[in-house]
Image 1 (cartoon, one colour):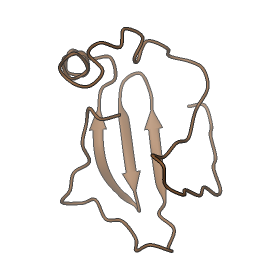
Image 2 (cartoon, helix red, strand yellow):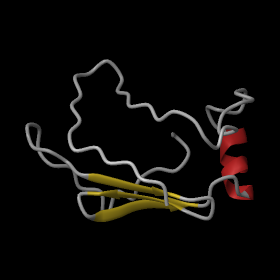
Image 3 (cartoon, one colour):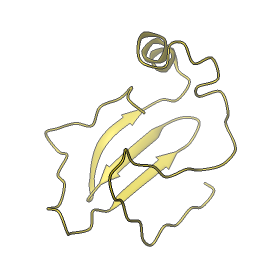
Image 4 (tube, helix red, strand yellow):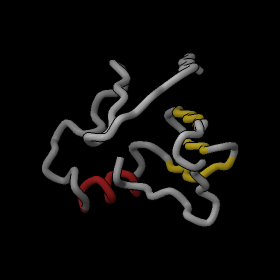
Length: 92
């Protein structure tokens, strides 16, 4: 979160009132985020680049940020209504 921005050239959100679809593939080798059928970002978790971005950004003083590799999945928004449907989670 807040370390790898989405590629604005391919990021396409549907208008308000229409659903967007997303797919996040997270493995220890690579993370991909797909939005409405287009890959908008990719990175390697816990890589040198990942740590450099973490330590240079908003998470630099958060010692535990990104340290847990298992646990709960949370859904959030910042003070706006948000809806989810058809959530599927599977272990790869």
